[in-house]
Length: 217
Ligand SMILES: [Zn+2]
Image (cartoon, rainbow, N blue to C red; front, side):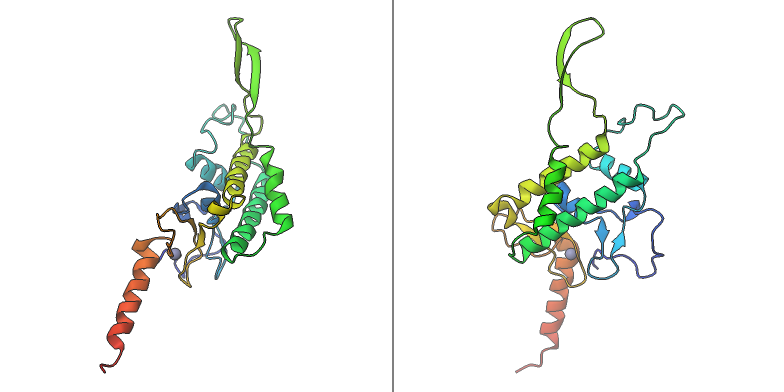
């Protein structure tokens, strides 16, 4: 058994939420893994702005109550524009992931795309008087939380890709029929499969069968 999608899946999906998975080991790689089966059908699981919103909330990058008007009739949802930008960032991160895995220099345009998002990742301090007139140093309400969430993903990607020791731990699952990206936190740094329960186990079973089939000498 591997983590692949069923063959009979009707594409494009109406929502990708049932097909998200979380073994990337860090937000930037879980995010890259939202485009599934990169080796075959390239299945988009961030199908709609609602998908992106739910994914960001699932990863706690976006507060549940990010939208002050939610529940009060007028709903402000993520826009198609943010979804487009999110996918663009995701593919820039993946271009860098692929380069890092094969030990090649990172693509300049992809690096720039990630860098452009870092301005959204910083703290947003605010100095103001509260309701009782007390001066308070706090944090500014995010005017555009979804873009801040993308900024945090870009920051995670930059921390991972911009540090040689971290970059050396970026992996693509060794299984031919799995495109999972993950961060190898194993002490020896020799992890090959996204998961030992799925791809790793399948490889073990195949190797065992191959050994059994070998004619006795
Ligand atoms: Zn795998």
